[in-house]
Length: 139
Image (cartoon, rainbow, N blue to C red; front, side):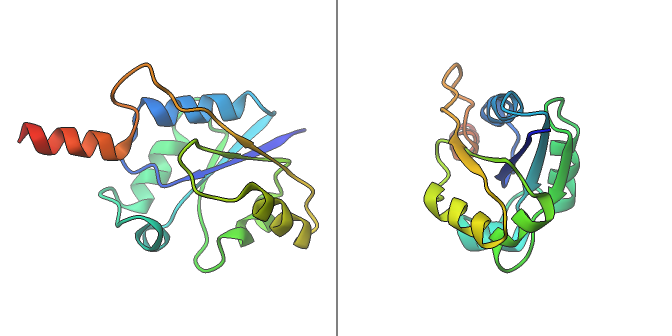
């Protein structure tokens, strides 16, 4: 069984997220999605509009997702030990270093591959910040 791990904030769900998770699911037999905790999202980008417990429930309800869990506080790579993925997928805009992820996996006894998913471009509603910007201009 090939386990795929995807991560993200998933603050305002949009077609780009659905594309990302659908493509991730195609890479294996099981898709586990780690939803960033509010505190981690705030450190990396900004405080999400939607609370973490609601975001994880929404992501978990999506068809491609087998299991959605909240991320860990502290070292974000510690989740690798819990999930033990064969593949880690990254979105086109996620600023993680693939080599660093593989090194962190190896430190934890996990030999994994990293795959970057392409951007979804069939609609203008393909990014959280784009949607927020559109909403602000329509107010």
